[in-house]
Length: 105
Image 1 (spheres, one colour):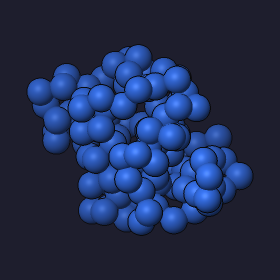
Image 2 (cartoon, rainbow, N blue to C red):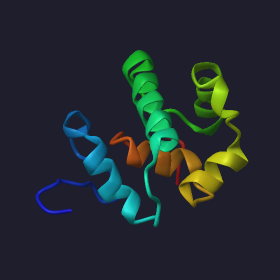
Image 3 (cartoon, helix red, strand yellow):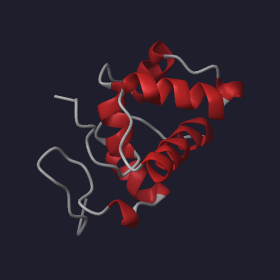
Image 4 (spheres, rainbow, N blue to C red):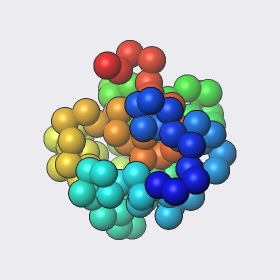
Protein backbone atom coordinates (compact mmCIF):
# COMPACT_ATOMS: atom_id res chain seq x y z
CA UNK A 1 0.00 0.00 0.00
CA UNK A 2 2.77 2.39 -0.88
CA UNK A 3 1.92 6.08 -0.66
CA UNK A 4 -1.79 5.48 -0.04
CA UNK A 5 -2.99 7.18 3.13
CA UNK A 6 -5.18 4.92 5.28
CA UNK A 7 -6.89 5.68 8.58
CA UNK A 8 -6.41 3.52 11.67
CA UNK A 9 -9.13 1.11 10.45
CA UNK A 10 -7.51 0.59 7.03
CA UNK A 11 -9.93 2.79 5.09
CA UNK A 12 -8.72 5.31 2.52
CA UNK A 13 -8.31 8.77 4.01
CA UNK A 14 -9.48 10.29 0.70
CA UNK A 15 -12.21 8.30 -1.05
CA UNK A 16 -11.72 10.39 -4.21
CA UNK A 17 -8.41 8.67 -5.05
CA UNK A 18 -10.09 5.24 -5.30
CA UNK A 19 -9.41 3.12 -8.37
CA UNK A 20 -10.02 -0.58 -9.07
CA UNK A 21 -6.25 -1.10 -8.67
CA UNK A 22 -6.33 0.42 -5.18
CA UNK A 23 -9.40 -1.70 -4.44
CA UNK A 24 -7.41 -4.80 -5.37
CA UNK A 25 -4.59 -3.78 -3.03
CA UNK A 26 -7.13 -3.44 -0.23
CA UNK A 27 -8.77 -6.75 -1.24
CA UNK A 28 -5.41 -8.51 -1.04
CA UNK A 29 -5.65 -8.13 2.75
CA UNK A 30 -8.73 -10.41 2.63
CA UNK A 31 -7.25 -12.80 0.05
CA UNK A 32 -9.93 -11.70 -2.42
CA UNK A 33 -9.40 -11.38 -6.18
CA UNK A 34 -11.67 -8.70 -7.61
CA UNK A 35 -13.52 -10.01 -10.66
CA UNK A 36 -16.26 -8.27 -12.67
CA UNK A 37 -19.00 -9.21 -10.20
CA UNK A 38 -17.07 -7.96 -7.16
CA UNK A 39 -16.09 -4.73 -8.96
CA UNK A 40 -19.73 -4.15 -9.99
CA UNK A 41 -20.67 -4.43 -6.29
CA UNK A 42 -17.94 -1.98 -5.27
CA UNK A 43 -19.05 0.51 -7.93
CA UNK A 44 -22.64 0.29 -6.62
CA UNK A 45 -21.46 0.85 -3.05
CA UNK A 46 -19.73 4.00 -4.28
CA UNK A 47 -22.96 5.01 -6.08
CA UNK A 48 -24.84 4.59 -2.78
CA UNK A 49 -22.30 6.84 -1.07
CA UNK A 50 -22.56 9.45 -3.84
CA UNK A 51 -26.36 9.47 -3.62
CA UNK A 52 -26.89 9.34 0.15
CA UNK A 53 -23.59 10.88 1.33
CA UNK A 54 -22.77 8.13 3.81
CA UNK A 55 -21.36 4.61 3.72
CA UNK A 56 -24.12 1.98 3.86
CA UNK A 57 -24.63 -0.34 6.81
CA UNK A 58 -25.41 -3.99 6.06
CA UNK A 59 -29.19 -3.86 5.55
CA UNK A 60 -29.30 -0.75 3.36
CA UNK A 61 -26.26 -2.08 1.47
CA UNK A 62 -27.95 -5.39 0.65
CA UNK A 63 -31.25 -3.70 -0.26
CA UNK A 64 -29.40 -1.25 -2.55
CA UNK A 65 -27.45 -4.04 -4.26
CA UNK A 66 -30.60 -6.13 -4.73
CA UNK A 67 -32.22 -3.15 -6.48
CA UNK A 68 -29.23 -2.05 -8.56
CA UNK A 69 -27.72 -5.46 -9.39
CA UNK A 70 -30.73 -7.81 -9.50
CA UNK A 71 -28.90 -10.22 -11.84
CA UNK A 72 -26.36 -11.00 -9.09
CA UNK A 73 -28.94 -12.29 -6.56
CA UNK A 74 -27.25 -10.48 -3.64
CA UNK A 75 -27.66 -11.68 -0.07
CA UNK A 76 -25.63 -11.22 3.09
CA UNK A 77 -24.42 -14.82 2.78
CA UNK A 78 -23.33 -14.30 -0.82
CA UNK A 79 -21.44 -11.11 0.10
CA UNK A 80 -19.71 -12.97 2.94
CA UNK A 81 -18.57 -15.61 0.44
CA UNK A 82 -17.54 -13.12 -2.27
CA UNK A 83 -15.51 -10.95 0.10
CA UNK A 84 -14.27 -13.66 2.46
CA UNK A 85 -15.54 -11.92 5.59
CA UNK A 86 -18.39 -11.90 8.08
CA UNK A 87 -18.06 -8.12 8.41
CA UNK A 88 -19.67 -7.43 5.06
CA UNK A 89 -20.56 -3.73 5.33
CA UNK A 90 -17.26 -2.86 6.96
CA UNK A 91 -15.08 -4.54 4.37
CA UNK A 92 -17.17 -3.78 1.28
CA UNK A 93 -17.07 -0.10 2.20
CA UNK A 94 -13.32 -0.34 2.84
CA UNK A 95 -12.69 -1.98 -0.54
CA UNK A 96 -14.88 0.70 -2.14
CA UNK A 97 -12.57 3.33 -0.70
CA UNK A 98 -15.25 4.65 1.64
CA UNK A 99 -15.23 5.41 5.36
CA UNK A 100 -16.31 2.86 7.92
CA UNK A 101 -20.10 2.96 8.40
CA UNK A 102 -20.95 4.79 11.63
CA UNK A 103 -22.51 1.75 13.34
CA UNK A 104 -19.68 -0.71 12.58
CA UNK A 105 -17.27 -1.87 15.27
